[in-house]
Length: 193
Image (cartoon, rainbow, N blue to C red; front, side, top):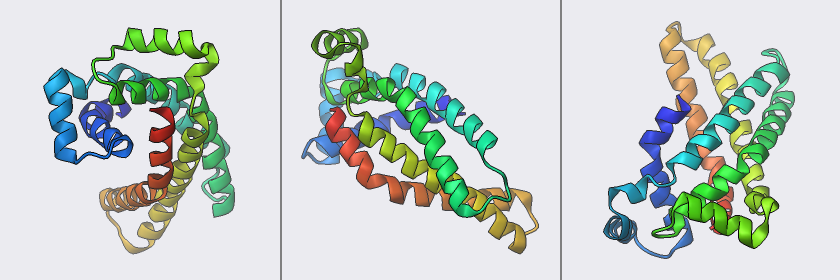
């Protein structure tokens, strides 16, 4: 599911990342990417984005399920979600770094990006910008996973339809995650670009 979401969202992510880094209108960013690289310019960061999701999502979801109990206090859930997400994002940070570099540099190929980073900074260079990246992940996951659990608990008391409970819990969770992550997302994009 994470890869499917990435296929759909990667063009939007490319535009958003460029908007955070460059002081141009959304229209001019879209026009620039398309003019210089065509439609592929919106998808060239897809391989590292998928790599990031395979590492981050599998670790985050599996570790959170193992470290939390449905009856845990909300503070314990926040600590659990933040900790496992920070760890998972640290492991996935090289892919995020590659993704952002590809999104913000025109006519830059993945192979050239990898060679350039390694040549300039060595292996540890792939973790450039990991601090705001890990902070963002911890904040987003605490907001997402905990608000989803809390939402389900709340909506179960007020609704009988399992599908509506999941829908409303997901909507609330997504809104909270977006709201909480925006500031650190901008910092992450600026540092990694």
